[in-house]
Image (cartoon, rainbow, N blue to C red; front, side):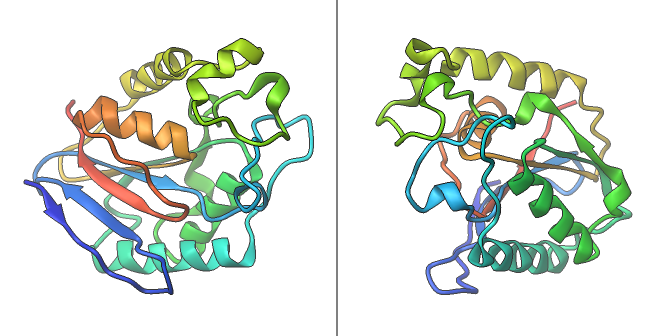
Length: 200
């Protein structure tokens, strides 16, 4: 089943994107972190060793709205079987805001490096390229490199019927997760999420 929902809760912000779900099957909720400092000038921020990007006030509000929508859909601590987040401050804060809204216990957040930002190599801190697949030429990761760790991550998941796994990650990682799971091309805006059926 594919259901397209457009619901604007904030100006120019649509938290619900696409659902391809069956109530009886396990589901994955892919959440892109809220707007952060590096999103505004559109520069790379892929290293935890350099200046890291944090959520803006707008980004925090985006995630609060996303949490409200997930709660309306019946997502809660009882039917969320696992929560994974990238180690970056912007994704960690996003997960914390979701937890503060009552979606799950913050102690359940597991950090996984396999869903961290695509490595930009020597271009970290610099303006983004038109084609991120070229980052390999600058000591970073190609899409194939990213896919390899995403596939490893998915293989380790233990989905349960009728329950949700929440993954808080970044634009490119979310895009590849969606493509690998559903075969669809979809880019999430900051703070948006998608719910997909997850095969065991």
